[in-house]
Length: 356
Ligand code: NAD
Image 1 (spheres, rainbow, N blue to C red):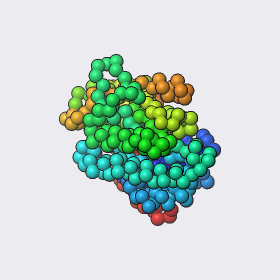
Image 2: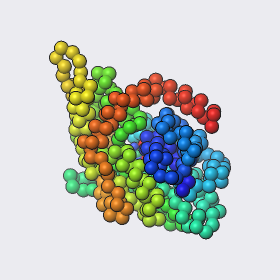
Image 3: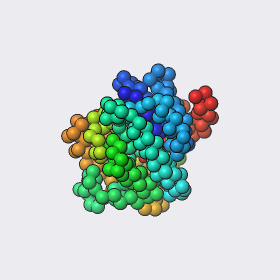
Image 4: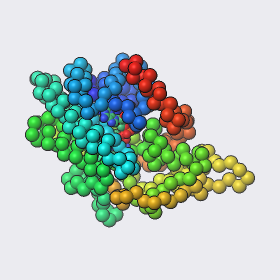
Protein backbone atom coordinates (compact mmCIF):
# COMPACT_ATOMS: atom_id res chain seq x y z
CA UNK A 1 0.00 0.00 0.00
CA UNK A 2 0.89 3.63 -0.49
CA UNK A 3 -0.37 5.66 2.48
CA UNK A 4 -0.65 9.44 2.60
CA UNK A 5 -0.21 10.58 6.22
CA UNK A 6 -1.20 14.17 7.03
CA UNK A 7 0.56 15.73 10.04
CA UNK A 8 3.36 13.18 9.79
CA UNK A 9 5.95 15.51 11.34
CA UNK A 10 3.91 15.74 14.56
CA UNK A 11 4.06 13.62 17.69
CA UNK A 12 1.64 10.84 16.69
CA UNK A 13 2.05 11.19 12.91
CA UNK A 14 5.80 10.61 13.17
CA UNK A 15 5.19 7.50 15.32
CA UNK A 16 2.77 6.21 12.66
CA UNK A 17 5.34 6.79 9.90
CA UNK A 18 8.15 5.14 11.87
CA UNK A 19 5.83 2.19 12.54
CA UNK A 20 4.87 1.80 8.87
CA UNK A 21 8.41 2.13 7.48
CA UNK A 22 9.97 -0.12 10.14
CA UNK A 23 7.31 -2.84 10.39
CA UNK A 24 5.51 -3.09 7.04
CA UNK A 25 6.38 -3.04 3.34
CA UNK A 26 4.11 -0.03 2.70
CA UNK A 27 5.21 3.36 1.37
CA UNK A 28 4.41 6.67 3.06
CA UNK A 29 3.91 10.19 1.79
CA UNK A 30 4.19 12.63 4.69
CA UNK A 31 2.07 15.75 4.04
CA UNK A 32 2.80 18.41 6.64
CA UNK A 33 2.65 22.20 6.77
CA UNK A 34 5.41 22.22 9.42
CA UNK A 35 3.79 24.50 11.96
CA UNK A 36 5.62 25.00 15.28
CA UNK A 37 4.53 21.40 16.13
CA UNK A 38 6.06 19.79 13.04
CA UNK A 39 9.57 18.48 13.51
CA UNK A 40 11.31 16.55 10.73
CA UNK A 41 14.03 15.49 13.17
CA UNK A 42 11.47 13.06 14.63
CA UNK A 43 11.72 11.19 11.31
CA UNK A 44 15.51 11.08 11.02
CA UNK A 45 15.54 7.29 11.52
CA UNK A 46 13.34 6.66 8.44
CA UNK A 47 13.80 9.71 6.21
CA UNK A 48 16.37 8.01 3.96
CA UNK A 49 14.09 5.06 3.20
CA UNK A 50 13.01 4.83 -0.44
CA UNK A 51 9.50 4.17 0.90
CA UNK A 52 9.31 7.64 2.50
CA UNK A 53 8.55 11.00 0.82
CA UNK A 54 7.94 14.40 2.38
CA UNK A 55 5.68 17.16 0.96
CA UNK A 56 5.37 20.50 2.74
CA UNK A 57 1.71 21.34 2.13
CA UNK A 58 -1.10 23.02 4.09
CA UNK A 59 -4.34 20.98 4.16
CA UNK A 60 -6.23 24.25 3.50
CA UNK A 61 -4.58 24.53 0.03
CA UNK A 62 -6.93 22.72 -2.34
CA UNK A 63 -4.82 22.96 -5.50
CA UNK A 64 -1.77 21.57 -3.74
CA UNK A 65 -3.83 18.70 -2.32
CA UNK A 66 -5.26 17.88 -5.76
CA UNK A 67 -1.76 17.87 -7.27
CA UNK A 68 -0.34 15.69 -4.53
CA UNK A 69 -3.09 13.07 -4.76
CA UNK A 70 -2.77 12.78 -8.53
CA UNK A 71 1.01 12.64 -8.36
CA UNK A 72 1.33 10.04 -5.58
CA UNK A 73 -1.90 8.02 -6.12
CA UNK A 74 -2.28 6.81 -2.52
CA UNK A 75 -4.37 3.76 -1.54
CA UNK A 76 -5.28 5.31 1.81
CA UNK A 77 -5.15 8.63 3.64
CA UNK A 78 -4.49 8.78 7.39
CA UNK A 79 -5.49 12.26 8.50
CA UNK A 80 -3.64 13.45 11.61
CA UNK A 81 -2.81 17.06 10.71
CA UNK A 82 -4.37 19.33 13.31
CA UNK A 83 -3.79 22.07 15.81
CA UNK A 84 -3.70 19.95 18.94
CA UNK A 85 -2.86 21.92 22.09
CA UNK A 86 -5.89 22.83 24.27
CA UNK A 87 -4.18 25.81 25.98
CA UNK A 88 -3.29 27.33 22.60
CA UNK A 89 -6.93 26.87 21.45
CA UNK A 90 -8.10 28.92 24.44
CA UNK A 91 -5.59 31.71 23.72
CA UNK A 92 -6.26 31.77 19.95
CA UNK A 93 -8.98 29.56 18.45
CA UNK A 94 -8.54 30.85 14.85
CA UNK A 95 -5.90 28.37 13.74
CA UNK A 96 -7.98 25.52 15.22
CA UNK A 97 -11.06 26.42 13.20
CA UNK A 98 -8.96 26.91 10.06
CA UNK A 99 -6.93 23.71 10.15
CA UNK A 100 -9.19 21.32 12.04
CA UNK A 101 -12.50 22.35 10.44
CA UNK A 102 -11.79 24.14 7.14
CA UNK A 103 -8.65 22.08 6.50
CA UNK A 104 -10.46 18.77 7.08
CA UNK A 105 -13.29 19.95 4.80
CA UNK A 106 -10.79 20.94 2.08
CA UNK A 107 -9.01 17.60 2.37
CA UNK A 108 -12.31 15.69 2.26
CA UNK A 109 -13.33 17.46 -0.95
CA UNK A 110 -9.96 16.87 -2.60
CA UNK A 111 -9.95 13.20 -1.55
CA UNK A 112 -13.56 12.76 -2.69
CA UNK A 113 -12.66 14.03 -6.16
CA UNK A 114 -9.60 11.75 -6.29
CA UNK A 115 -11.55 8.70 -5.01
CA UNK A 116 -14.38 9.29 -7.49
CA UNK A 117 -11.81 9.22 -10.29
CA UNK A 118 -10.57 5.75 -9.24
CA UNK A 119 -12.10 2.57 -10.55
CA UNK A 120 -12.39 -1.15 -9.82
CA UNK A 121 -10.44 -2.60 -6.89
CA UNK A 122 -8.48 0.60 -6.28
CA UNK A 123 -11.73 2.49 -5.69
CA UNK A 124 -13.29 -0.31 -3.62
CA UNK A 125 -10.22 -0.67 -1.38
CA UNK A 126 -9.51 3.05 -0.86
CA UNK A 127 -9.78 4.30 2.76
CA UNK A 128 -9.91 7.74 4.42
CA UNK A 129 -8.98 7.38 8.09
CA UNK A 130 -9.69 10.38 10.31
CA UNK A 131 -7.73 10.45 13.58
CA UNK A 132 -9.59 12.14 16.42
CA UNK A 133 -9.67 12.48 20.17
CA UNK A 134 -11.77 11.30 23.13
CA UNK A 135 -12.10 14.97 24.10
CA UNK A 136 -15.05 15.27 21.67
CA UNK A 137 -17.15 13.39 24.25
CA UNK A 138 -16.59 16.02 26.96
CA UNK A 139 -16.53 15.33 30.68
CA UNK A 140 -17.39 11.96 32.26
CA UNK A 141 -19.63 11.86 35.31
CA UNK A 142 -18.68 9.63 38.24
CA UNK A 143 -15.85 7.13 38.50
CA UNK A 144 -17.33 4.25 36.44
CA UNK A 145 -18.62 5.77 33.21
CA UNK A 146 -16.57 5.11 30.06
CA UNK A 147 -16.61 6.71 26.60
CA UNK A 148 -18.13 4.38 24.05
CA UNK A 149 -18.37 4.86 20.30
CA UNK A 150 -22.05 5.78 20.84
CA UNK A 151 -21.43 8.39 23.58
CA UNK A 152 -23.00 11.73 22.50
CA UNK A 153 -20.59 14.53 21.64
CA UNK A 154 -20.23 17.33 24.23
CA UNK A 155 -16.90 19.11 23.58
CA UNK A 156 -15.72 21.69 26.15
CA UNK A 157 -12.75 23.54 24.59
CA UNK A 158 -12.22 25.28 21.23
CA UNK A 159 -9.82 22.39 20.41
CA UNK A 160 -12.31 19.60 21.15
CA UNK A 161 -15.17 21.53 19.48
CA UNK A 162 -13.07 21.87 16.30
CA UNK A 163 -12.20 18.15 16.37
CA UNK A 164 -15.88 17.28 16.95
CA UNK A 165 -16.80 19.42 13.92
CA UNK A 166 -14.26 17.57 11.78
CA UNK A 167 -15.61 14.18 12.93
CA UNK A 168 -19.14 15.27 11.89
CA UNK A 169 -17.88 16.37 8.47
CA UNK A 170 -16.10 13.04 7.91
CA UNK A 171 -19.25 11.05 8.86
CA UNK A 172 -21.37 13.23 6.59
CA UNK A 173 -19.03 12.59 3.64
CA UNK A 174 -19.58 8.86 4.23
CA UNK A 175 -23.37 9.09 4.51
CA UNK A 176 -23.82 11.58 1.65
CA UNK A 177 -21.11 10.65 -0.85
CA UNK A 178 -20.19 7.13 0.24
CA UNK A 179 -16.53 8.11 0.82
CA UNK A 180 -15.05 5.01 2.55
CA UNK A 181 -14.09 6.51 5.90
CA UNK A 182 -12.98 5.23 9.30
CA UNK A 183 -12.73 7.30 12.50
CA UNK A 184 -10.72 6.67 15.64
CA UNK A 185 -11.10 8.59 18.92
CA UNK A 186 -8.13 8.13 21.20
CA UNK A 187 -7.21 9.08 24.75
CA UNK A 188 -4.11 11.06 25.85
CA UNK A 189 -0.89 9.84 24.25
CA UNK A 190 2.60 10.00 25.73
CA UNK A 191 6.03 8.77 24.68
CA UNK A 192 9.12 9.79 22.66
CA UNK A 193 9.18 12.93 20.46
CA UNK A 194 6.34 14.62 22.39
CA UNK A 195 6.51 18.42 22.03
CA UNK A 196 7.81 19.93 25.29
CA UNK A 197 4.71 22.09 25.90
CA UNK A 198 2.64 18.98 26.78
CA UNK A 199 2.35 17.79 30.40
CA UNK A 200 4.73 14.80 30.51
CA UNK A 201 7.73 16.26 28.59
CA UNK A 202 7.21 19.63 30.29
CA UNK A 203 7.46 18.04 33.72
CA UNK A 204 10.56 15.98 32.80
CA UNK A 205 12.40 18.93 31.25
CA UNK A 206 11.44 21.43 33.98
CA UNK A 207 12.52 18.94 36.66
CA UNK A 208 15.93 18.48 35.01
CA UNK A 209 16.42 22.25 35.23
CA UNK A 210 15.03 22.37 38.81
CA UNK A 211 12.22 24.64 37.63
CA UNK A 212 8.69 24.58 39.15
CA UNK A 213 6.48 21.69 37.95
CA UNK A 214 3.13 23.36 37.14
CA UNK A 215 -0.04 21.38 37.91
CA UNK A 216 -3.48 22.79 37.00
CA UNK A 217 -6.04 23.30 39.82
CA UNK A 218 -5.91 20.50 42.39
CA UNK A 219 -4.27 18.06 39.94
CA UNK A 220 -7.11 15.56 40.40
CA UNK A 221 -8.19 15.54 36.71
CA UNK A 222 -8.20 11.99 35.35
CA UNK A 223 -6.85 11.03 31.92
CA UNK A 224 -6.50 7.60 30.28
CA UNK A 225 -2.86 7.41 29.08
CA UNK A 226 -1.76 5.46 26.00
CA UNK A 227 1.83 4.92 24.85
CA UNK A 228 2.17 6.52 21.42
CA UNK A 229 3.59 3.40 19.73
CA UNK A 230 0.52 1.43 20.88
CA UNK A 231 -1.62 4.14 19.27
CA UNK A 232 0.38 3.88 16.02
CA UNK A 233 -0.26 0.10 15.92
CA UNK A 234 -3.97 0.66 16.57
CA UNK A 235 -4.19 3.20 13.73
CA UNK A 236 -2.46 0.88 11.29
CA UNK A 237 -4.82 -1.96 12.31
CA UNK A 238 -7.83 0.28 11.69
CA UNK A 239 -6.73 1.61 8.29
CA UNK A 240 -5.84 -1.87 7.02
CA UNK A 241 -8.57 -4.02 8.65
CA UNK A 242 -11.28 -1.70 9.99
CA UNK A 243 -14.83 -1.77 8.67
CA UNK A 244 -15.79 1.16 6.45
CA UNK A 245 -18.02 3.74 8.16
CA UNK A 246 -17.10 2.54 11.65
CA UNK A 247 -15.69 4.43 14.63
CA UNK A 248 -13.19 2.82 17.01
CA UNK A 249 -12.28 4.16 20.45
CA UNK A 250 -8.63 3.64 21.37
CA UNK A 251 -7.44 3.78 24.98
CA UNK A 252 -4.77 2.50 27.29
CA UNK A 253 -6.83 1.26 30.29
CA UNK A 254 -4.54 3.51 32.31
CA UNK A 255 -6.63 6.03 34.22
CA UNK A 256 -4.44 8.33 36.27
CA UNK A 257 -4.92 11.62 38.09
CA UNK A 258 -2.60 14.29 36.68
CA UNK A 259 -0.88 14.68 40.06
CA UNK A 260 -0.14 10.92 40.12
CA UNK A 261 1.45 11.17 36.67
CA UNK A 262 3.62 14.06 37.89
CA UNK A 263 4.60 12.13 41.03
CA UNK A 264 5.45 9.03 38.94
CA UNK A 265 7.76 11.17 36.78
CA UNK A 266 9.42 12.68 39.85
CA UNK A 267 9.97 9.24 41.37
CA UNK A 268 11.53 7.87 38.16
CA UNK A 269 13.81 10.90 37.90
CA UNK A 270 14.78 10.46 41.56
CA UNK A 271 16.02 6.97 40.58
CA UNK A 272 17.52 7.73 37.18
CA UNK A 273 18.89 11.27 37.66
CA UNK A 274 18.93 11.93 41.45
CA UNK A 275 19.17 15.52 42.62
CA UNK A 276 22.65 16.40 43.79
CA UNK A 277 23.51 18.29 46.97
CA UNK A 278 24.26 17.76 50.61
CA UNK A 279 20.72 16.66 51.44
CA UNK A 280 19.29 15.56 48.12
CA UNK A 281 15.48 15.69 48.16
CA UNK A 282 12.85 14.52 45.70
CA UNK A 283 11.77 16.28 42.52
CA UNK A 284 8.29 16.17 44.10
CA UNK A 285 9.27 19.29 46.08
CA UNK A 286 9.17 21.26 42.79
CA UNK A 287 5.42 20.61 42.24
CA UNK A 288 3.57 23.95 42.03
CA UNK A 289 -0.21 24.19 41.76
CA UNK A 290 -1.38 26.86 39.28
CA UNK A 291 -4.78 28.38 38.39
CA UNK A 292 -6.95 25.79 36.64
CA UNK A 293 -7.54 25.89 32.87
CA UNK A 294 -11.01 27.32 31.98
CA UNK A 295 -13.49 24.61 30.93
CA UNK A 296 -11.10 21.90 32.19
CA UNK A 297 -12.79 18.48 31.94
CA UNK A 298 -12.52 16.37 35.09
CA UNK A 299 -12.34 12.84 33.71
CA UNK A 300 -11.80 11.01 30.41
CA UNK A 301 -11.74 7.21 30.13
CA UNK A 302 -12.12 4.97 27.11
CA UNK A 303 -13.94 1.70 26.61
CA UNK A 304 -11.70 0.07 23.98
CA UNK A 305 -13.65 -3.22 23.81
CA UNK A 306 -14.72 -2.75 20.17
CA UNK A 307 -11.22 -2.42 18.68
CA UNK A 308 -10.01 -5.23 20.93
CA UNK A 309 -12.79 -7.63 19.88
CA UNK A 310 -13.03 -6.75 16.20
CA UNK A 311 -9.36 -6.09 15.33
CA UNK A 312 -7.53 -7.89 18.14
CA UNK A 313 -5.69 -4.72 19.20
CA UNK A 314 -4.56 -4.37 22.82
CA UNK A 315 -1.90 -2.02 24.18
CA UNK A 316 1.49 -3.65 24.74
CA UNK A 317 2.70 -1.14 27.32
CA UNK A 318 1.31 -0.66 30.81
CA UNK A 319 1.57 2.84 32.25
CA UNK A 320 4.52 1.73 34.39
CA UNK A 321 6.55 0.30 31.47
CA UNK A 322 5.60 3.10 29.07
CA UNK A 323 6.38 5.96 31.42
CA UNK A 324 9.78 4.46 32.30
CA UNK A 325 10.62 4.13 28.58
CA UNK A 326 9.51 7.72 28.07
CA UNK A 327 11.66 9.18 30.85
CA UNK A 328 14.64 7.13 29.65
CA UNK A 329 14.07 8.39 26.09
CA UNK A 330 14.04 12.04 27.18
CA UNK A 331 17.20 11.55 29.24
CA UNK A 332 18.93 10.02 26.21
CA UNK A 333 17.60 12.57 23.70
CA UNK A 334 18.17 15.92 25.33
CA UNK A 335 19.61 17.10 21.99
CA UNK A 336 16.18 16.67 20.34
CA UNK A 337 14.61 18.63 23.21
CA UNK A 338 17.27 21.33 23.06
CA UNK A 339 16.66 21.82 19.33
CA UNK A 340 12.94 22.33 20.04
CA UNK A 341 13.52 24.61 23.00
CA UNK A 342 16.04 26.90 21.23
CA UNK A 343 14.07 26.88 17.96
CA UNK A 344 16.87 25.35 15.86
CA UNK A 345 14.54 22.53 14.70
CA UNK A 346 12.64 25.24 12.77
CA UNK A 347 15.76 26.58 11.09
CA UNK A 348 16.70 23.05 10.03
CA UNK A 349 13.27 22.36 8.63
CA UNK A 350 13.43 25.52 6.51
CA UNK A 351 16.57 24.06 4.99
CA UNK A 352 14.79 20.75 4.53
CA UNK A 353 11.78 22.28 2.85
CA UNK A 354 13.92 24.20 0.40
CA UNK A 355 15.53 20.90 -0.59
CA UNK A 356 12.19 19.07 -1.03
P1 NAD B 1 0.91 17.54 16.89
O1 NAD B 1 0.45 18.92 17.23
O2 NAD B 1 2.11 16.98 17.54
O3 NAD B 1 1.16 17.44 15.30
C1 NAD B 1 0.30 18.01 14.36
C2 NAD B 1 1.01 18.01 13.02
O4 NAD B 1 0.10 18.57 12.05
C3 NAD B 1 2.27 18.89 12.99
O5 NAD B 1 3.33 18.20 12.35
C4 NAD B 1 1.86 20.12 12.20
O6 NAD B 1 2.93 20.71 11.48
C5 NAD B 1 0.81 19.52 11.26
N1 NAD B 1 -0.17 20.54 10.80
C6 NAD B 1 -0.83 21.45 11.55
N2 NAD B 1 -1.61 22.23 10.76
C7 NAD B 1 -1.47 21.76 9.50
C8 NAD B 1 -2.03 22.12 8.25
N3 NAD B 1 -2.89 23.16 8.14
N4 NAD B 1 -1.67 21.43 7.15
C9 NAD B 1 -0.79 20.39 7.23
N5 NAD B 1 -0.21 20.02 8.38
C10 NAD B 1 -0.53 20.69 9.51
O7 NAD B 1 -0.38 16.61 17.14
P2 NAD B 1 -0.42 15.10 17.64
O8 NAD B 1 -0.40 15.09 19.11
O9 NAD B 1 0.55 14.30 16.87
O10 NAD B 1 -1.90 14.70 17.18
C11 NAD B 1 -2.16 14.17 15.88
C12 NAD B 1 -3.65 13.93 15.75
O11 NAD B 1 -4.11 13.04 16.75
C13 NAD B 1 -4.48 15.20 15.90
O12 NAD B 1 -5.51 15.18 14.95
C14 NAD B 1 -5.04 15.12 17.31
O13 NAD B 1 -6.27 15.78 17.41
C15 NAD B 1 -5.17 13.62 17.48
N6 NAD B 1 -5.05 13.12 18.87
C16 NAD B 1 -3.99 13.49 19.66
C17 NAD B 1 -3.87 12.96 20.96
C18 NAD B 1 -2.70 13.30 21.84
O14 NAD B 1 -2.69 12.89 23.02
N7 NAD B 1 -1.68 13.99 21.37
C19 NAD B 1 -4.84 12.08 21.43
C20 NAD B 1 -5.89 11.73 20.57
C21 NAD B 1 -5.99 12.24 19.31
